[in-house]
Length: 157
Length: 345
Image (cartoon, rainbow over all chains, first blue to last red; front, side):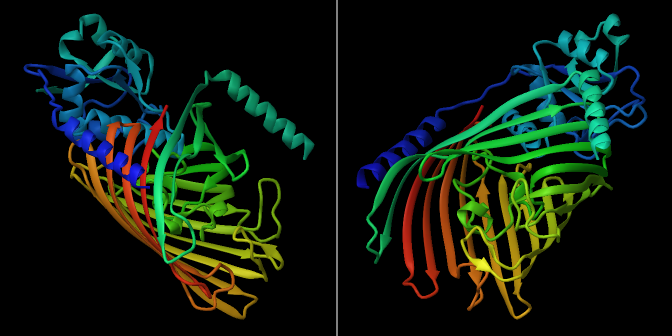
């Protein structure tokens, strides 16, 4: 009993100590992101809080007008665009976002966000999928991309 | 009947083939190390490692409107590993405020029972509170029910929602209902401020004469009524998180013996980066002379520290002080320390 207690206490102390050395850094200077939806989506623009509610499917699960399930698109790995979107639009950490979608899937069988490796992949997905909503660096929106998707919000860091 | 079944199968098959299904398999597991000692009892101190629940769940977006979820848990039942089908449901979406689901669910009573299910990585403490224990652990609530429910949410900017369920009830198993009467569950909830959730719910069922409950008591015909109120603020923008739940269970046996049992849960935590120190207090208080349940008043105080390594890898260190006072038996006081590694995959 004593041994197991000591092991547990020492493990906890080591964890606390190790976390205090963790630092976070980000270099988001000058990143402007665009929140995009499919070009046929009748939504003209969204405020940051509306974009958050839609992306998280908090109030509505479908887009009005096109009757399509809302399909959030995300980046697979941490990047400047994701950091801006999470902090400025969702107001959540990356861990919170991940946990949020997993919890919704576990509770209600809701499909979690689709994840992509690049802005181009997100633009292609949003352009193909009528109910999609995603975010990309504004600089990635070429004329060809703009023919497929609609910008409903821009956010600068 | 046969024609209806054939027609249903045909419609289902067409639906499955005409839409590219998006099926995902995920799971949760936990490994615990614990040490406990009891005061003034003959039971020896214990320390051991344990495998918790090995939980596999499948979700599938079958069509634009139809989704399903299945959850199976492998757990040690004292002799060997047993598989329990904990949930299987098909949900048909009509509107945000109106969907219909059929299958086996967690009963929509309160917050905890539908937020955390079986995966420990999402749950704030290392075990469920006594008032919310599963039926096969001697819990007082009908945690799982088989039936159909109407549900919806997203009503007004306060995110009102509801569940209305008709189910087999307590005296039933996966294939049979031991009486004609059905259980009714109603749940109203709202989220007036982001992540602040309020619930009121109720449940009514009739247990038939001669039924043996999960606690092993053979009862006379009993009407069971449950009333609940819950509040929860979890994963919000403020670092604090809390859950408060109250359950009032009235059992009326043979229209003669009416007794009230109260279950309660209070939990609070405070997020500091990846750590969440937390405290909880929960218990069950039975009315003297209770005959439907084993009259065993329990109280547990928990002090814990959660280390969130990643969204689905969590280490919990907990101290619990548990008291139980079973009618006609000496009270038991137990101290327990648990280290749990809970993860999802």
